[in-house]
Length: 67
Image 1 (cartoon, rainbow, N blue to C red):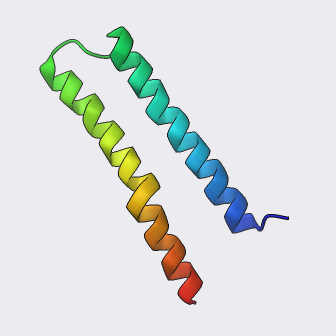
Image 2: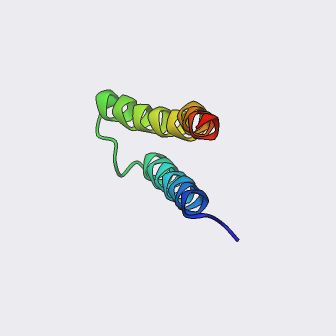
């Protein structure tokens, strides 16, 4: 059985991955890009969300486990 924190983390990771995929699909279809600045903004969003999934989530888990 998953604890509340584990369920929250799992759902958060799922939703963040879904958002990354949504942005990628929009980039591929060209629906969210009108110019180079828009492209950079969208790819920056992807990079930030991937950082949240990677280092930040792991750091938070490590901090919680120390308590």
